[in-house]
Image (cartoon, rainbow, N blue to C red):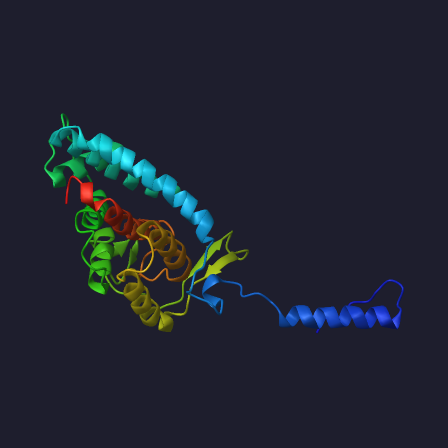
Length: 265
């Protein structure tokens, strides 16, 4: 217990400060989201979220209506542009700049769309595009451990993350922290759950993700918040790669919301 002394040194004031100190020590909030006793039971303002969802649904309906009156080829070009933009923007969030033309060419090639001047793409970009298309085209397929491992393998097809040899397509067996700062003056921003919790957390997450609970957009938001904040589960996956994996959970759920008019079902 820390003893705090009041300027006037009156005993009654000192006792009050000591009692407040003890109370604060007993009511310290968990430092990380996965340490909360309610974890992972998320709650939200349904009225406020409902208003946002109504706007989203109207916007999606308008977009789908516009797509329904154009030809198949134009729709496929729109799909290429949409997926390419999502991949590039998701990478830019973490400061990873992908070549726009390589991404577009890779997406178009895998969808069978002929571009005027296609560009050869790198192995890494092809891997990211394969993940995006799997989440988009196979959005109704269950999300499984094996599917996640396949996405992880797409990110690291050689088994190397930069100069480091890693175990591909498996959950991590070591600790994971998000740290910044110079050597010797590091600042820990986040500590992920211990590795012995990963199997239990992932089994629970996949059961929930594959269930019919919640609207697809809401579930997408929870998946992004919960998984990115709690798991960081793949070996060799750092803060620059994790958003790419999380993005595909978002893609799976939002694609299910608009599947009735998707041009590449």
